[in-house]
Length: 114
Length: 113
Image (cartoon, rainbow over all chains, first blue to last red; front, side):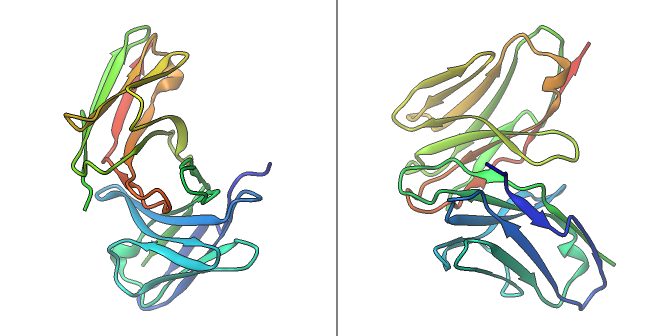
């Protein structure tokens, strides 16, 4: 099976702009989670989508949003970018079935906000 | 909510020696504990995991132990090799249905030849 893919791999934006990141999960996986990774804060959970519905949400402001499509692909949007949003954004896919926990990460999108 | 602590933050060992990384969690309802390895510039890779109904799990040179009473779990790597050098993250999850993991801050392991 093909692994988790993310596009684009690199992005450079300026403050105030918005950005959309995309994640394609492993075929058959219905759950997609998003994480922000920074040197100072480590890996922080943003939200999880399962069957096109947000199932869990972390402690991030409303500027961070997401959605999932019927083919399980997911997008994450960040509006009104701030310098502190510079980070590696990772998505992870899993089957989403109760009791099945393993999740697999994509390569990430490195966002730089200038 | 859940909080995961991880120690040490950096660890250097000689090739062939063992390495141990320890994590503690706060939520006694957590029931799944994976370990990820992240090499420089690469994605985190799941290397081993353990469920709360198991005390120990081993996969070749890697083992994980879980002490539910003390709420801590550890990663043990034996016969370390230079390719084991990476950042290792522990994590904990409570929700059986969701995938909202809480990660430890990571341990940078350096295996010196």
